[in-house]
Image (cartoon, rainbow, N blue to C red; front, side, top):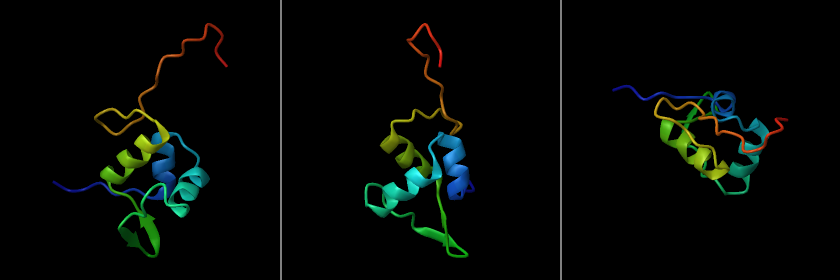
Length: 77
């Protein structure tokens, strides 16, 4: 089975967290640096994406897409 590899922008889109927040978490050591780099750019595996999602409290479904949580508020933003 082939591993899916994503760039930082793709990870940001998948989990719905701003790119700079992910970069900051990596820079301060809260999230480990991904092991892979292609053309000196970070490349994230599906395990890396799950680790980042867990750190930011994002629930992912089996297809690695963000699962929308229902809002308890009667007034949507």
